[in-house]
Image (cartoon, rainbow, N blue to C red; front, top):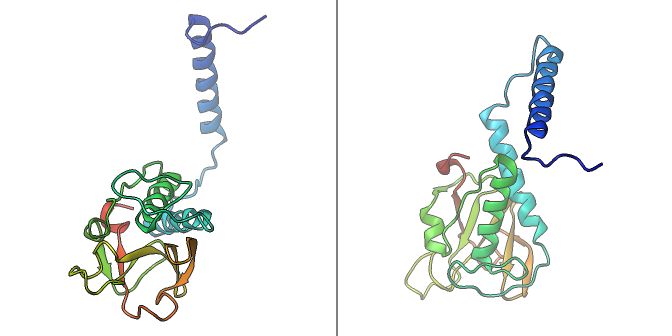
Length: 186
């Protein structure tokens, strides 16, 4: 015999009884000294690690220049990589994704600059000093800082998402780091 339709009164009573029993069993089985809630620092570290892990999941993904909010996952540019890493990482860690702006200057403006970068922060390079906008022009570049002087970026020159140094192999010695997580409650 097929189970009752989920909207039937019988099915709802079964679900309610099961939920009540499970909740009561959880209360009765809980130890007297339950573990405290994780600290804000532990939660923040978990969010940052989720952002780094998401960026790592894109390693090898082909590069494709995108404009605006049309940011696919099969091919990404540097801003799209940041957007996916931040949204997916924060969503996995907390259930709530952080939506980043689609252009470099907007991403910079969404956070705050830091001289002490942590994994999960964004890194920006002024790869086109002649565009008139330091670190946020159309031909500048960005990625996700993963720690130990390393970043992950969607690199047009190499045509894929890859590991990189924070100096892009020594060509960009003056990057800036932007924390978009802490100012937005993560």
